[in-house]
Image 1: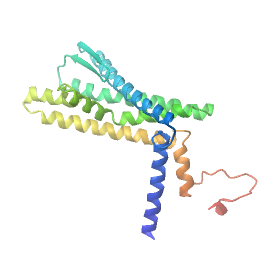
Image 2: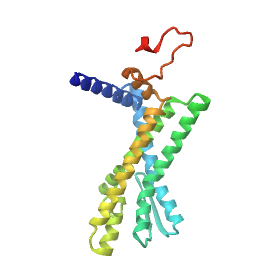
Image 3: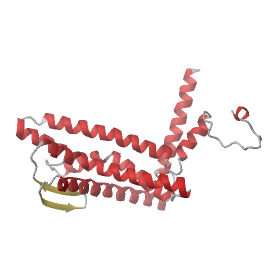
Image 4: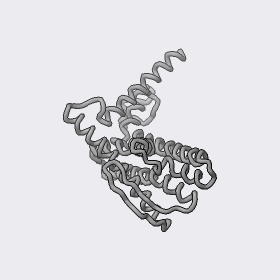
Length: 234
């Protein structure tokens, strides 16, 4: 009996994951829709990169740290600046990721309140926000891959490493702190992305699907003229 329950739960989870993948436009669709999905993904990943470095630039200006050079490339924006302590470098690393987190929360709020108060929000816009949320979760991974492919030893992964290497001749502490902070931000972004997909995306369609296939919820609409009872529905 327990094995049957586990198999049933596994099928439900697989079905829900398939629906999420379909909502992103990865599995279902025509050639044109596939092309639009790929273009959407690349556009969102590029916007995420731009927001990442804009957030870092703004926090440097807030901390009154002199930015000596800004180099624009289609895949990266390189900032050359002066720093004095560990907290400044840590703030730069965190604000790159958090700038995307805050923008995702803002877009999520627009979608939520639009659906709640004006009862509509474009499906394609929901899809775009979902892609942006996924890109936000993978922000540090994308940044690190580009930095390593570009052989940039001043990238986010190496900022604290370089600081501790100069200050204490041991960059391991800086590398550990960077990975620890980014892992925490990854958990936060995954939590926000889960709440968007489950309870906001396309008017909480995934939550509605789960309620229907699980048969556990009392959120079904039941007519007020007693055509059907909760017991009979179960």
